[in-house]
Length: 139
Image (cartoon, rainbow, N blue to C red; front, top):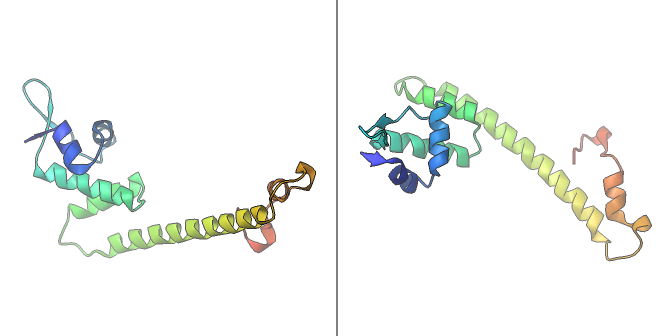
């Protein structure tokens, strides 16, 4: 059995984060010693590592909760997990497109910025000017 500090070190997760995951139900409530200290076994280490990796991939708490629920039935079809991952991928691709547009807008605004008057500043002009809604650009 591992104490909370041990599982934290093993998984690279902060102790407070482990407690939070227990509070919101991503991790099961830990077993306790007679002195009230949390203890964990190999199953909890695997689940916490799963949660950490899912977070690293950008999955939301609700998505992780769904993935954990799916993992409880290893013999079922993985169609639902694939669908969830595809929706997440689409969200990531949308964010990448928005970040690319943001990068391009900032690059354009800063390209010719090498001093001068604020009244003539392309950065200030770019910030003042609303995004081109007709093109769908959201910066």
